[in-house]
Length: 129
Image (cartoon, rainbow, N blue to C red):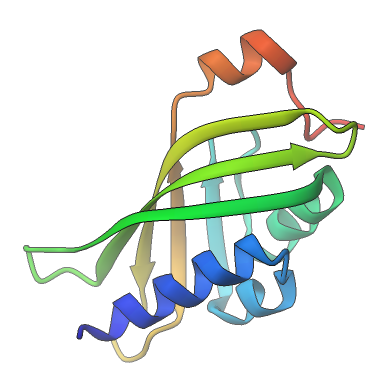
């Protein structure tokens, strides 16, 4: 099994358990996240914001994809049932594209890919207080 598969499985499990310390430990010190809602942020503050906005995460893995171009990339595809602080349940499919440091399994960049239109039209921006 490819080394990145383990990292993505750990990530999805930790996200489902709201274990943000484990998620943050997967990232390089200068790791970043690109979010459709929040833009590009350092990974630590991004996952702090997600923790503050969330009351429950249920992750249903669909598949993991490894780059065929020999790049240091892999993607996790999953269904995300996200219950936000006010109790609203938001369900959507997401593809998280991970870029890794060439010498190890630390994540340098995470690009969250999902359609925000249905979410915003129903519930607005739940990252804001």
